[in-house]
Image (cartoon, rainbow, N blue to C red; front, side):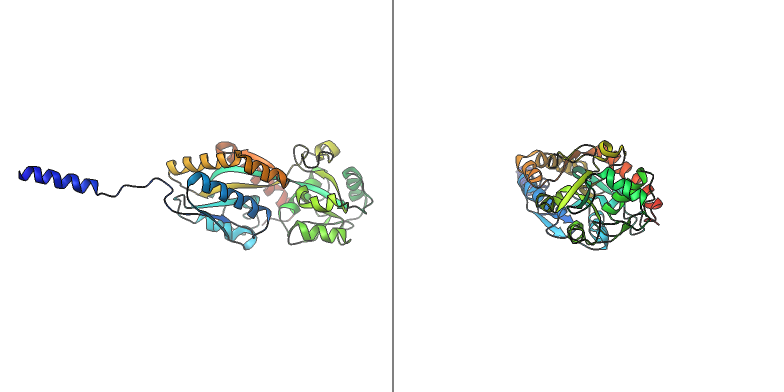
Length: 320
C-alpha cells in the first residue's frame, strides 16, 4: 500500500513539472540601426509584421541610431544569442571598421539572409549639360580637379565609396571630384537641383520622385543589370565598360551563437516572409531591389564586399 502511494506521488510530481515551451515564448526585438522613416526602417517594419505571423509572437522594432550605424550594430551583436534580439544589418558593417569606428564585421553575426540590395546610380540635374554618363566621365577627365562636386551621403558613406570606386575603375583619381557631405540622398538631390552640386551617386529609387518630376536625369546605375524601375538607364558596364558595381544592401541577422534549433526556425520564417506576396509587392512598389542569399552564399557576398570597400576606401583616403 505504501509502495502504491509513493508511486502515485511520484507520478503526480512528474505531471506537475514545468514543460519547456517551444521558441519563441515571448516578444522579439528587431533592432534597426537607422532612423524611423528611412529605407532600412521600412524594410525592418515589413519584416517585423510578417515574422509576427510566422512566429506567433510580437516583433517590436527598436531604432538604435548614432555613430554612423555603430550604435545599432553594436546593440545587435552584444545581445544574448537566444533569438529574442534580431536586427537589420546594413552595408555599413563593411565600412565602419575600415574607418576605425568599430571592430565589428559581418562575422560577428549569425546572418539569417540577405534580403535587399539597391545599386548606386549616377544622377545629374535636368539642367545639366550631360545627357550620358560617357559625356560626364569625359568632362571629369578633361577638367581640373575640383571642377565637379558630388553628394548623396556623409563623408566615407556608401554612396561616396560608390563614386570613388567608379572613378578608380575608369583610371581617374577618386579625389578629382569634390565630395560634399550630406545627411543622405534626399538633401544631396535637393542641393543638386538647386545648383549646389553637379552629381549625386545614390540609389535610383531614392531619386525616383525627382526623376519622374523631370528635375533629375539618371545617367547610369552601378548594378550588374538594369533596374526594372528604370529600364532605360544603362549599367556602367554597358555605358563605359567599367567593371565596378556597388549596392547598399540589408540583411536579417542575430547575435553570433544562436542555438541551432532557434536559428533553423528563424531562417525558415525569414524565407517564408521574403517569398510572401506582401513582401514582394511592398519592395517592388517602392522600387527596392530584391535579393536573396543565405548561408555560405551570404557570407561570400559580404566577404567580397568588405574586401572591395577596404581597397577603395584606402586608396581614396577614407580608411585608417
